[in-house]
Length: 419
Image (cartoon, rainbow, N blue to C red):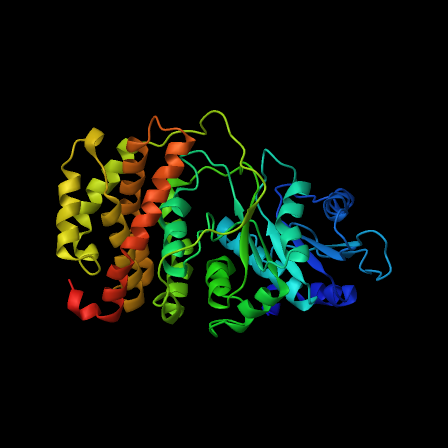
């Protein structure tokens, strides 16, 4: 376990707690993270379960330490201990700080030998945090599942990195139709948590740089039982478009590393299957916002002019020619075909593996292509409703599956397709 993610005084506080059935990480925006309020919420969420659940709530932005560290075994109601930890380096960026928080929470779950652990990182608008706790952890504690991933009701301009790359890639490679394979809200069993620690590649003790990148693949590789739960409409921060290249590098880097590590697994998998799900989808009225397709297309055009040499290290000549053709289209007619986009993602996965150029530089160079996909998506679905958007995403995921033999061929015989 990544004990280096927690300071020594806090480790001693964890030792005083002793053990737990459940560890819940609450990554709320409220810096105070009121212990009494959170205890009451967790007790209410878990109070309907068949047996009392000894629970430790882990909250960031605290001063460190534990409150009510004892967890009596003879309690007739859920006993809830409260553990606070401080972010180790406030100078870190928000994404890396969030990843550190995940590492801390999972480490606490491992050290306490919890039957289940997980995180509530978002703030849904249409259900309470109490409902989120129940929906994420009841399938683990009472129904025998090992992984509970979230389903959200999103506006069509939200969650686009997940919709365009993370979800269809995970589905095609590992054969399970997870809407959000990287959470950010999730619950995992103690068995799956232990497997994640065992599969560490030695780059660091405990979990890899971003533990979310390997949850879905680890569950699939070990035959763990996964399901999904509806968590309502997720409140999501607006995308920082000027720093998009950094986001792509930080998110896709660990994902592509995980693909490389699991090559022997995903090369054997064919097709995909839907997973059991709990809860009910909820309709969100209105539109969260629009995207500036003009600027996105300008970025795409600049990329086709200035990044040909970089892209030529990973993309075949036919793809480069197709990108030039797209750059000549009028904005209203701009459409990036699904098979082209899936092939581009697969080519970048392979280029990352082969280290044809610096990995960070490679991933950042993907930004104009990603913006081109978003512009195409936004133009095509400008007047579409939620059902049309979901159908559109299903078609994209099906194309990723259909194009998987392309990745297999390039993975096994990269020189044959060397551009």
